[in-house]
Image 1 (cartoon, one colour):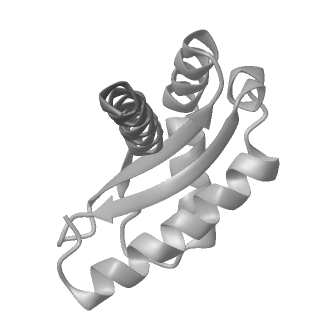
Image 2: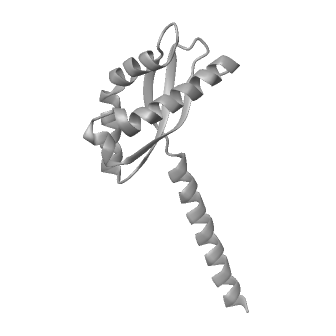
Image 3: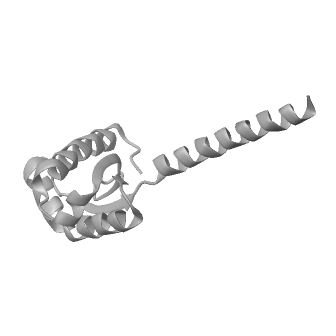
Length: 126
């Protein structure tokens, strides 16, 4: 989404501010149950929309509850961004769950399993 230098700077600023809100501003217990961190923010070229990717550590139930808490806090997050970030219009914020860390660890586990299986297969041929 972010193509211009300005959009990239705004995305970094939004990422930092939402990260601070996650630490101290959002009082919803559902968000506090799992370890939630902002991994990336994509801002549209016209700065009207921001997709906030969050990584949530915990069970699937905890992750679902945290996402529900973030969805319900969207209005609060947008109003706080409006106060903290000097923009003509505060972007619409949409939270998305970032599962890339889970996929990465799953791929590593599969590669390790393959390597272990190849080692045992080589032992059989000796």
